[in-house]
Image 1 (spheres, rainbow, N blue to C red):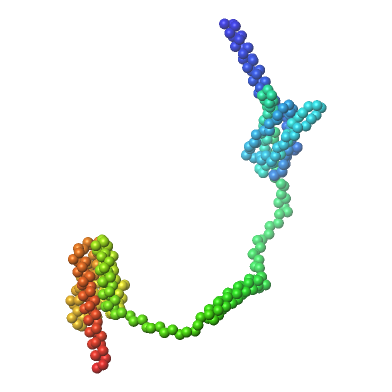
Image 2: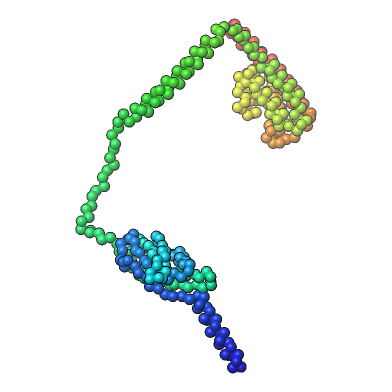
Length: 325
């Protein structure tokens, strides 16, 4: 039992000595060039350690009130011994007492792996504000904004450049116009007047073309009735002067009835009422018509146009007879 205790005690001593050998720490003193600086001033901290092998600089120093500006490490030789001379520059913009924290510097022996760590002491210094003599402060009124006088010479270059650009543009335009006129022969061409088709002929041709497209067979009944009513509305505008494209179906019927009520046109109005009612159902109520209604609608459209043209001609004849009397 005593042998085991003695062996354990010896092992602890050996491990402790090895740890101290590998990771020994030494505390060193530091110096600062002054212990009091103004706000934004610089304070230099210096110290040195024995440089046996490779000296590792301290890691980044982080504080809330200090700012590390620079740190340098120079190897010097004194009385046959090497030393690492460190110099760190700090500054602060906060008034009060500040402490430079401890710095840890490592001296590493690359051959044996032994590290010797040196720890500096924390040291304090004061940051003071610049003295202000309040008795000599002179308060002055705020001066108004000075209006700068206008000088036409300042904008003369812009005016001349603008005029020059306009002159170039006008000159190019006149030059191009001159050459175009010079190369074209001055020949008067006879343009025959365009004979416009009567409103009923144009509408009947449009209905024939609509029938040839076979839109109901393709399931495009809404398109079919939209084109059909557009043909009728254009016919009413050209034949009777009714702006039917901007009217509802009921407004068209009412307006047309006011113009042709003097003669027997009620039967023809019934045809138009039939066409427009089914067209509104298909376009707005998604009503599905059968083939008979589709064919009947286009036939009644043709009949309406023919009868309406006859009525329109009768109205013109009566108007001429009245004027001749």
